[in-house]
Image (cartoon, rainbow, N blue to C red; front, side, top):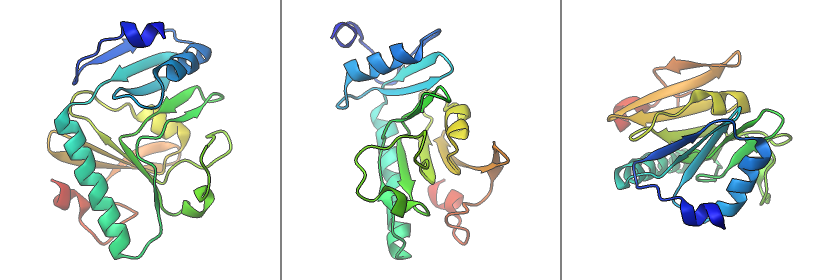
Length: 185
């Protein structure tokens, strides 16, 4: 475990590596393991490793809890998979969202302990907290995540996938009759 002992990233800091092969990424992911504070993002040879601040985690929990409360109040079945690593070697993309939810496609993941983005559907909603770094839309967009919420500087942005690209919306298609942006901001 050479890398794990050598990496010292302070909370709120990030490292960006270029020219990282998919095999190197997989090796780093395996070496760092599942129980770590760092979050990883990989896109076409670029690997970002970030360690969140406490304010990041507070915002993540608050927004994630809001989603759960709204879904439960509407009696909508869902699966919350937290910061699960979503990866697709064919697309050379991987991302660990701060939180993610299967809502419309919840039935597709019931009982699955391992998901493969080359065959399984992506989460219906991902949440990213951009307090110390800016989320790259590419990862979520290429993996086909229909709805991405990005929170930064006390402001929520809702991005909806349309025609393969994210378009900023004033409302959430998941909660069309609720002013999510006003609730969060």
